[in-house]
Length: 245
Image (tube, rainbow, N blue to C red; front, top):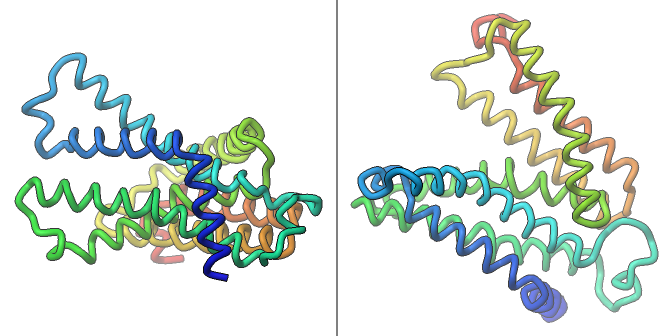
């Protein structure tokens, strides 16, 4: 099993090296432009470039995640990998290894480098760094992987994301307006943790359903349900009435 996972991992790395290099390059630029010290060095047009980088970096991350999932799409029952001598667990393990190696680990090293460059020991903040990895995976990596697992091709994935999130985002804004704001102040971490938990559970179920059973209709329903629940949490009323409820 180990050799099969490594072979799939190497194949994905060889096929997706342009996306990997793009993400790593943008991540390095983002680390250099950390707000703690870039303000004294970046002015005028360069400041606009930094702001643009903050938008482009998540897009490059999503592109890499979607691309590696689509290397062997789990939709349908006529994919070539179903006839190969490896189980769905081999394929899923290879995808997890790829994301850890080329997405999570670089982000962890980037954040550690920024701390060290500003005089803080990464070891002293290891718990915070690991917590950031959990939220990063829950809110960026896993949702993109789940959406890619129920779509074919980059264009359909983008269209599915737009059709899924735009109406829910508008509904969330409307609910927040009707609730006269939704700030939880110092207790915001409770709602953020709830959103992360729902995202992890929902995306994890979708990915397992697709790789183990390829139940696309059920997986899409779970994904939509998780998205609705996330939007309801984000649009929840201020913490006082929520605490009463």
